Image (tube, rainbow, N blue to C red; front, side, top):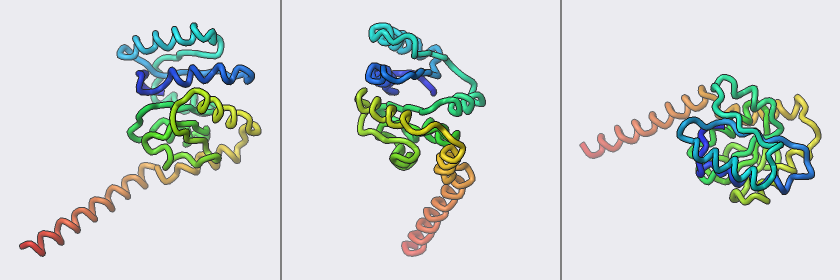
Length: 185
């Protein structure tokens, strides 16, 4: 989901697929745009070189309001990035009840409950990605209870909670500022 560039580590996810040949799966890569054309072509070439064209689909850009349909349809969401600032894709996936495999970047460790809502891997080595995908896909089929628990795991990241936290932080900064200037003045 999102922009497609080398920083996202999508090549590592594609390289993980041969480790999963024994499992029936489909990889849907969503995102792109004009700025991603070169990277997408390189990824398509990698797919051809690995001879795994059938299970890989490059969907292109999708309207933001349609993303929940894709998250809900997925058995897992994989975020193999080298860098993430916040982990929004992981949050969106979990909010839809879909477990996540993600690299240890951004706030993934603060978002994903290890073994419960997904897995955080130390880096995007293809065999590590494949191992965790296999673990997720070997779980009993999705049920409403597990999806509900995954969704609930990210309630604290709702906009109202985030806004309250920002207000609290601003109040602390303001109080410290006023306290400091009273002493100095």
